[in-house]
Length: 444
Image (cartoon, rainbow, N blue to C red):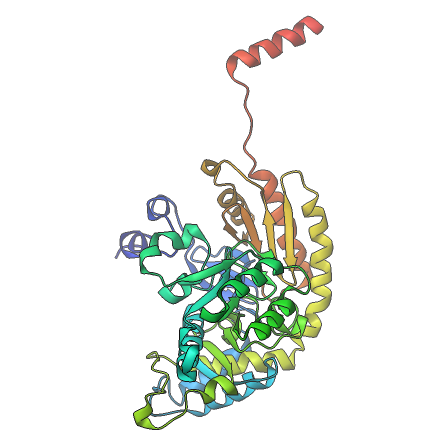
């Protein structure tokens, strides 16, 4: 029997990965996890410094979520939401509406953050078509420079990261970009294209995949006000920022903003199961109501929409938020993280540290691309027992909210050591070395 590594190298195509490099390396095979640690096939333990791609909230193998999934397995693992429903989907929708910003009352389930964004875009588009009259001209969207909303075609159309999105240009629909965090530029775009716009889509407070780009205070609130003034819908993509990542349950709360549509994913199930949700106002929902022959139905769905196991995990995740007072206990850890990052920002190897709650981007400045500095830092951290990920030459830290203060200190300390260790050693060429030695002898 071939080893798992060999089978992986022979058959698996990894996301966002140059496979030629991948097959020359010996990957860690993660076989177990507990709390904030991942354990590989050799028994090595690693601190999960990126929450298994930003989705683990309460730690791995949390007993409450584990039990919720086990209990659901005793009932039914999957049943379609087309023509049927189940108690878990109904209860979860109610509880999401309870904790969401005011006005978001309806919940449409899908499978991932990308599909949650896709659903929101289609809902916004079809909403205006149902309104009729001049509103049918509202067919385009506004997104931010360096935006990332996922990798399906609609989500890519409102993306702004050329490295990820440029190759698919011929497949995409039209979107207008506004400069990130620049409210004057957002106003310019809205004034110029007002009559054709269906919605503005933003990642509230923080643009994650852009390198943890943080927006200035008041920016999100100002965008909401501009959307209201110009009669445009606002979509807030909380896939990365939701479920405590910025310090509150949802980032929108910090500026008192209620969007017309909100996208959820990642932390929704605590990192256990694929599940996403798009929340809408009652006003948008009502525009899709009508007689059968009116064909106002929202014709969209997925095989695993509202999967019972995933809904059970999400309900367990919400239970833990309440039982463990997760957001209250998070506050002192955010303060500690902020304090420790001051020393990181003062390092000569670091250009800037960007932080919002438990979302951190450590910018190593412009580097020679061949050095792959971000990758080098990640490799050094792994040698020291910590898993982190780069976005280019920005090192991202995004630990589970449940991390202890001791492990939080370790995460920052190892990252600091790894940044220093990753720096290339400058060597003198032989001639220069000879001249230097002669100069020393002469001085002696």
